[in-house]
Image (cartoon, rainbow, N blue to C red; front, side, top):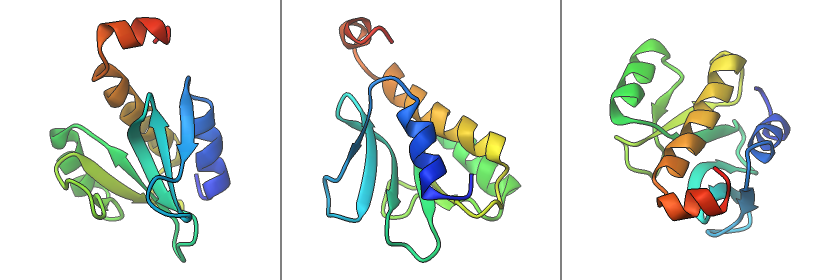
Length: 118
């Protein structure tokens, strides 16, 4: 995944995913039921995406890929930032986006998941 267009397509394919701009007009935040699972800057010179992860997974990913860094302006234990430049394999990046989404969905109440068929 090497572009914001591809990132948007991957996120749009997830059930009930929404594109929002809660902070400003250039920070695109992907949410499910109002909870953030990915964010990116539309005007960054070097596009990247920040994603939610389990703390142990985040540490492991940062050790395995020098391009993956702690979440920019986010909780460093629970978020990572991944460049959209091909330095992280596409399949892994898609898996990380889906995993971030899944973490947020798992945090929803049972009633909320049932209402959304998740």
